[in-house]
Image (cartoon, rainbow, N blue to C red; front, side, top):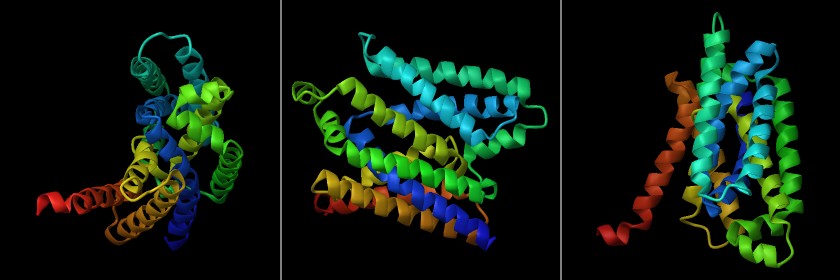
Length: 265
């Protein structure tokens, strides 16, 4: 049991290093719904892995990356709100995933449920290596394009005037989000993976005085939530993924009341 928790904790800490950055970018660009789209589309990746008999982590990542490329391309030629586009892709991918799941579900429904809600028992040393490599790739890319990512997140028009290829930088950023989201599903679950990106970063916003400090706070809060959630999971034999998210959410609401206490007194 301890070995399983250690593997889960290591994978969670590795993911936090990336989600701290990427969750902050999602909040700055007001694109939190993008991860909900990925969440719905993950069912398609899970069903595809069962159909092709391959590792679900890899099929999910491939589906995430493909849909992100499709989304970014259509976004630049679609004249209306991106929320509409996200909704169309989200529910289309979910519907296709449900159709494929109904075809392959015989004897495999348990596997689908594990990936929808997360299961530490599924994490192996190979998964740790895959997550570590993905996080390392994401961090190297973020540091290399840091100024460009920051500028397009704060002001896309100014970035364009400054000579930055907004399409290229936004594509790279969202591909990184899709990559880390796909890798996180085995740990946290498809239905709750969005919260791993958004909740710690949203909490960090209460305390941050600069973009860099917001990212640092987000990483630390994420690691604290993961550690607390796994401890609760081990003590009370409850699902690990939801436990982590509940801890992160509790910190979020405590921060709200703490910051607004002067208005409540």
